[in-house]
Image (cartoon, rainbow, N blue to C red; front, side, top):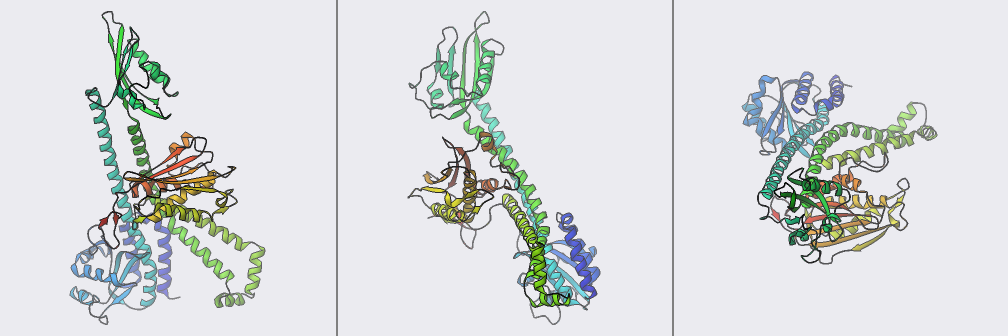
Length: 587
């Protein structure tokens, strides 16, 4: 092997080993690569430029220059034009006197630079930047060098791309933090307004004459819990008996302290049972009136329905937590992905070389003094191929986890379109019907599927692939939850709600306890045994619905047992037209 190829192979191996340490700093990584390349090639200057997509696709930013004193070269219009020409290159290209007009040789001559090499930095079809080797002084082994640098280019491109992703995540987290701060300030202002103008608000008023025992509840007080003005009497027991068992002691104790004169007023949050059997969160406030002897003779106050505020606070807290974990998940996933790809690729290469009857494999076996059939027989006896399959299966599972982590932290990508949610549900069900796993103890084909679709449901603007991923996650969770249910049934519903479309996926399994429902969408939370779940399925679904589609998703209990997953998607959301950034609603 030529000395240059050996040196470049060692460089490539060192870079893979150091990738975890360098991935977070493209400048240090670029300088490391540029220094190594310049030490192995007879070239005066090595520049690495990054395509600045935030400003314009035709502007490039200097990441690394060796030697540093030549940094000004990277800011010249001539080299920026040369970098733009690399858009049309798919591999390392030598630019010199023999190059065609318009290839960049004119720009190099204008700067007094001789024959050079342009190396486009691309990863998975995405252009991240360009590496320029200016003024080749030693052309020996150029072909081998260019081939090796082409292999190195995607690695550097990935590092540049990751750096942009980290920067974007920081901006998103900063924006979300500001939004939460403004929301909290608005909540505080709202509470102060309620306290200053009690009767001018939409609160329910109550009045209790302790001398006569007479109680008054305003119409709004009764309306908060679902009743008309004359449906329930004005009696104290209408409040006391409707208190949630977990809140009764606290609410009664707060009022008793005020009755006894221990405190002049009180404020307490509790739940009251609604007419429909659900509970409403109430902010109860009251103050006492004393006679000349200092005895409390009257109390009055207000009830504020804070159910929606409590829900919003829970959503904000959960979203803030998930955004924080999302940043961590993205970093972990990118760092894990590189060595994992190497493992899977090498397992595949080993399997091909040990099992396929290619001329190279047969020749190598003959040179070793045995036949390829004998090698395969030995591997079968020693279960070597089974071990390779186990490595591949484990690696693939890790790759799926990495993919889920990236999807969890990634903002909306891909084109949206107008989709028929009924068709997406049917397609998702068909795909899930092929899922059979003895270890998971369920067969989707044995589950009865009931469809209750709204025949007048309009098309919904969404990313059909992302929404289908959510449907399949929910269907798989429902199927696994009903593994021990005698007659497993999944009910699929769609309905129109003014400016939203509602989708329900309901099962008749054991259901979720309240403490599990509260944490169901948290990243990495799972009730499954170790090795059977990553805890990211519902988290990814949450981000797809809430962040990418501006909808909402919730888990609800089903009377008699089971869980109902409810998704609401907006109809007014615009979607990108193909080939442009304009938006248009669904027809």
